[in-house]
Image 1: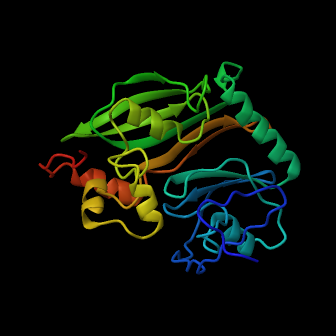
Image 2 (image 1 turned 90 degrees about the vertical axis):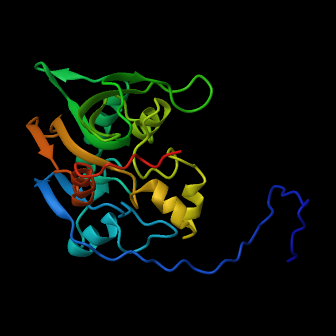
Amino acid sequence: GKKLRHNDRVRAEDRVVLWRLPFEEQDTAREIAIVFEDEHLLVVDKPPLMAVHPTARHHHATVVKLLGKSRPGQFLSLIHRIDRETSGLLLLAKTAEADRRFKRKLEDRTTGARQRDGALELEKDYLAITWGTPQSGFVVLPLATGAGLDARTEVLVLESRGGYALSRCRLHTGRQHQIRIHLAVTGTPIVGDKLYGPDERMLARAADGELSEDDLARLELPRHALHAHRYRMIHAVTGERLELESALASDLQAFWDERVNSRSAPILR
């Protein structure tokens, strides 16, 4: 019942109320393309700048909400998540048993890729457009604090154009932001990355709608240029071998095509 001072300390059982104006959701509903579906698994092609589940700022135009609206009463559970800005393949389970089995498969991959009859149980390839050209090969760099968590990304440069590169990034572990961090720390961050790119403070400014013209010029894209491109996997329920693919999103393809005729250097520093 009292306003806190700057030097007040919270204690157990205290209740703190924070008043703020509600966020006005700016997202619009978009069609979500189906890549694969059977009685156990639903694979969709997530558009860029669409949250996978509701958050404080994104309520209705999310993958979970839109699919739930179009499939009333159907069980759907996210098997994994990708960032709101990342486009491409997203897996959802249609039964509780499928959800358990596919998530176990992801956990197995994080501790080391399993094989079955000589084939990888799960292989995830992303496409990334970077400032500068990374070195093809493995990036092995622990993530998180302390001793860190094992993280391995296999990078293959597909093409370089005028200070930019298009690369295939294969995940051998599944850490949060793994590809973005690995490319950034090796000196070739992903174009448009507000957290690991030119200035990490851009992320907060973007959340508040306060990106400056200079910020936008340095980012070059309104979202980071990362796309979940291809999954090769053994179906966790049926045992079927699946190869699922999503073509590079149209906004990233247009940006890459423009690099052919662009003579300007990347605006990074």
